[in-house]
Image (cartoon, rainbow, N blue to C red; front, side, top):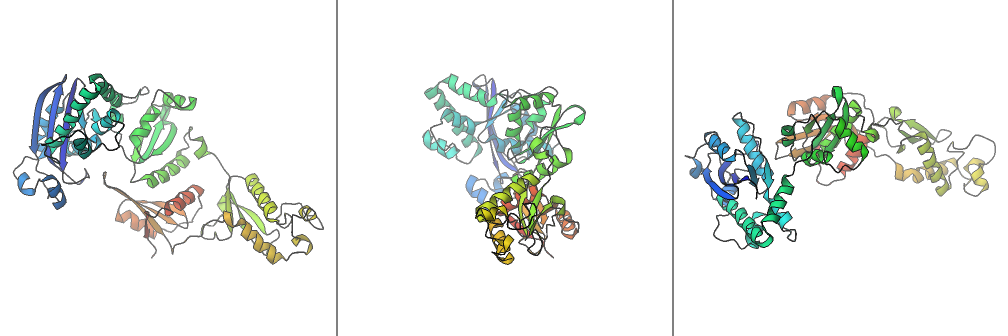
Length: 463
């Protein structure tokens, strides 16, 4: 299938590389299609194996008590992996554990990888499930030790042998090469750095000459998104020009998509990357404020005038005065409001022009009371009303990435984003922080959307 490939499977104490450990390793190496090595060993994880994992794998604390530690077998494992492609079912899981274990002993693992789950999907697209259990059932595999490392490796090898017989060697090889095909990288980009990109949420930053910020983006899968920029099939001339100008990139992993969205919004405003035109575009945000005692009874307030703690009489968020006025004119026409009372018609004596066309109920000439007109204005604008802060004080929005051990708590007060905490000390500092609250439309909309999700974890941080 490939010149050299090592099929590997791990058993572990759990699903999180940063806190869980390997309990068993099994591998079979092939060189030019011929099996050249087969190796398996239990590993002492140096921590208890949870009861659930013991019942699932059959590996208990007693079995691993006298087994070697990972550090003791690391050199042997590296020898088996040297010069090969690492193939595993859901290779991100196995590769992530191996990289973490090697990092603990001061070794950086750089390995080409092949995911046999993705390979199974390419070879058998007619099937819905491609987990080990589904493969065992589909290929009628018997006599394997399921949930043990070598048994799972042998299940994958059995599936690939069936695929060669059913689809042909060339089809299997073509599918593997398609998954292994590397993107064409811009000049000056370190290919090994690309290999370190995680399949996790976060923000990525592209830089040009003299570290000029070119572009800032976010994704729930950093690796897939960054690599998509390097595709030879560019979606636009802008995309092609940007990658040609790029000299380096970096990324920041986050605990989830909400964390990535907030970080992207902040970094774009701070660094003004030249290819983020839409997000960094200068704007004059404004909103309509109702004051029944004033004349006219609505006035336009700009973003820097908005008090986030006093939003009950604010309606709409508009990118310009022109957009705000056009929207209010349409609402007035649909609801038969007085454009003169709204300040949209130059002051003159007598009724407004809309009253003469029977599109105003006459507040401008005593036919309707100002109180009733003001009430109708509020009702007509209700769909545009900004949300009043529904909490006693500060709140935290918590996100977890269990696989990478990331926990982030984003602190808000009256829709204003105050910052992110990753430990109790920084959280307490944000809870105690007092600052002038400055309204930001992007943060407001992101938080509104997040709060609409039932699964959002909201922490009450009010004293």
